[in-house]
Length: 591
Picture 1 (cartoon, rainbow, N blue to C red):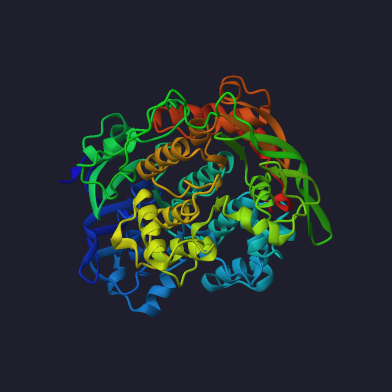
Picture 2 (picture 1 turned 120 degrees about the horizontal axis):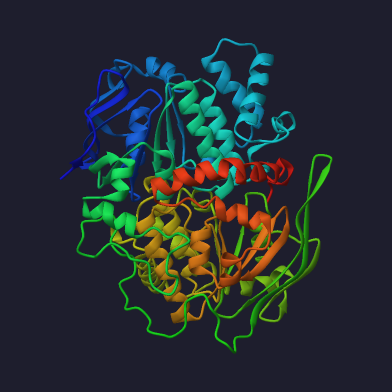
C-alpha cells in the first residue's frame, strides 16, 4: 500500500506521470505509479536495484525496448507516449534529457569528447560549429573539467570514471532541457566531486528552472538534494513525502529498512549492518544465508601474529599523454597483513585504481617493488604470474565494462573455473551456482545477459566471478559503489563474513569514507598519485592530520536533510574553496 504525504499535482507541473505501467512479456516492471515534477523542483526516486527506478526513467525517454507501456507521461501538456518516434527524437535532449548510470554507455569510444558534445549541441540548437565548440568548452568548465580546450580532443578512455560522468552531464545540459533525469549520476564519483556535481545540478535547477528527477540508492545524496522523495519497491511507489518528513518519520517498513541499512561515519563497525528481514517483502532477500562467524576478532583487523601478505615499496608509474608525462603513482608504499582489510581512498584521478592494476600485473610499473607472499611481482614472467592470478582476484569499478555482454550470468561465473582447469563441467556448474547464491542471485538470474540486469545486479555478478576461485587476496575497486544501501549492507556483511571464514585479505579501494571506515582497519589517503596520510581507522577518522583528508571527511553525505543543509551552509565558506583548489588536474585523471 502506498503512503502519500504530498500535495496533488497542480497545473504548474512541467512533467506528470500518471498510472504508468511498463510490461516486459508477462512481467510488470513498473505497476501503475504516478508522480509529477514542477519547474525547478528536485524530486528523488529511491529504492533497491530492480525496483523499477531506471525502467521508469527510460520510459520517460521512450527508450524501453520490447516493452508495453501504458498510462500517461505528460511533458508540458503533451503525452509523450502518443508521439511518433520522429517527434519524440525532437523532444529527447531538447526538452527532457538523461544522465545515465554508466557513462561509458553514453560515450562513443572512437570519437573525441569534443566531437560528441558538439554533436549534442548542434542537434538541438541552430548554431555553427565554432559556436558549438565554444559552448562545449563552457559546458566542460561548468561541470568542473579543467583545461577544457585541451580536453575536447581527448577520448573517453583518457578520462577517469568520474571525469567521464562529468562529460555526460555536460552533454545532457547541451540542449537546455526543461526536465533532467539523473540516473545514479554520482555512483562512481568521490565525495568531493560528488558534492560539486550535486551542487551543480542544484544550481541548474534553481537558476534555469530545470526540474530534476534524481534516481539514486544513496540516501545521503538524496537527503541533501531532494525536496520530495518517492520510494519504489518492486515496481510500486510505496511511500511519498517531503524529504524532511520521510527521513524523520518513515511509515513504510521498506523505507525504514533502507534507512536502517545506511553506512556512514557513525556506523558501529564492530557489528554487522542491519539488513532487511528475510520475511519482509523486499526486492532482494538477504544475500548470505549461512550462520555468522562467532569470534572476538573484528573483520578487517589482522590477527596479532599475522605476517605480511602484500608489501608495496616506492611504487612509481607514469603515463604519456600527448606531450605530457603524468606520474599517476608517485613513490607509494604500504603493507597489508594476512587477514587484513586495507583501505585506499582519494578523489578520482588520485591513482588508486592504477595501484590496484599494478598489483595484479595488469599495468606494468616503472620502478619499485611489489611482493605477494614474499614473491616479487615486479617484472615477473607471464608464465609465473598466471598461477598467482587464482590467488589474487579483482572486482572492477565498472561492472558493465568488466562483463562480456554476450555471456549469461552462469557462463561469466563459470569461466574462471574453466580457465584454471578446475573440476568437471558439472562440478564447475555447482560451484558457480553456490557462489551466485552467496551474493543473492538465484536460479532466475542464471541465464540472463548483462543487459538484462540492473547496475547493482551486474556488480553482484562481478563479485561472484572474483570469489568463485576462492582467492587469498581480493582487490575491491569500488566494489559496492553501484549497489543500493540494503544490498550494499548485505554484500559488506558477506565480505566480512567470508574474510573470517576463509582468511581472505582485502585491498578496499573506495571513495565512500563511511564504507571504508566500516570495512578497513588501516587506511591510506591518496592525492595526485601520492599517499598524503596513512594510519589506523581510529587515528585517521578521529584526528586527521592533513587538510585534504579533512576536506574528504567534510564532504561525506549524511542521510539526514537537516544535517545536510547545515553542512552545505558551513562548507560553502571553507571546504568547497579548498576542494576546488585541490581538484586533481584533468591530465591526472588516468588513475
